[in-house]
Every structure is written in C-alpha cells, then in structure tokens.
Length: 85
Image (cartoon, rainbow, N blue to C red; front, side, top):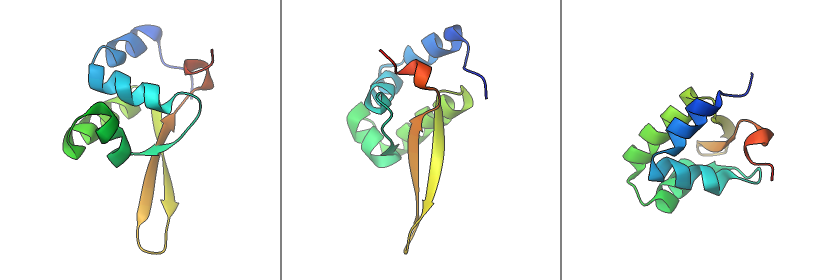
C-alpha cells in the first residue's frame, strides 16, 4: 500500500479527536479502540467513526489478535514515514 497523499493526512488530522488518536499511535505503538477513545475524550462509538475514517484514509490499519475469549483489534499507523522524526 502506498503512503497517503499529504492533503489527506492534513484533512484527517484537522479534527482534534483524530489528531489525538494519531499522536497516541506515533512511535509505532498499537492501541485498542477503547484506549484511543479515552485519549481523544470521545465515546467508543465516536472513536469507531473516527478510526474508520483514519483506516479509509490509509493512515491507520487494524490488526486482529485471536484470544481465548474474544478477538482483540489493535490500531497502528500504516506508514513509518508518518511517525518518524
């Protein structure tokens, strides 16, 4: 997958909640949606909407891990170029 266009990145980061989520994912870490909702100070449903936009925009991908009880979905930045200093 190619890196997203920079105008797409700018538009997606224009929302404070999405920007907070992206900042939390910088450095290559992965986080569940519930944690990103807390960081962005939004409800889980609102966080899911924001994360869907970030995935559609190519900034975030979802990694599914099968657990004993449930499947966990972790979010991470798609491109290292987005978080390298």
